Length: 105
Image (cartoon, rainbow, N blue to C red; front, side, top):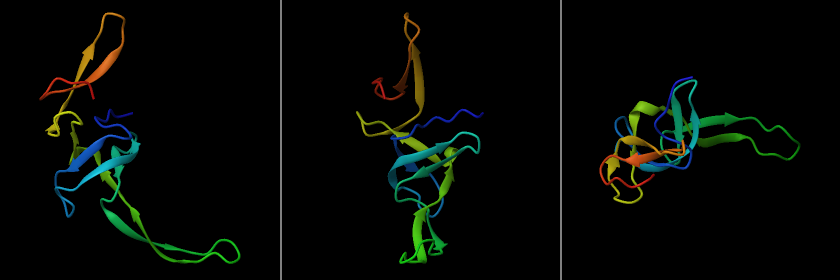
């Protein structure tokens, strides 16, 4: 398992590619592949067959996966893109910290 710096529900910004500069919420994280799915980013067309009687088939737009290294976390407190730091407390709990403002993520 690879370690990924973002979690489901984080707000991220895309660093490069056709969707560079777009912000979105992380919908899904796949540590095994090292990829994330971000809301409204990397839209792909999927051809869907009707499965049940009366169900519509056709072309559906859906979010495609991005490599996690292509996105950077946006701090909810200061609003800047930041790297993730970790803080270890005496009771053994670990917390993610913003490198720029020092607030908990």
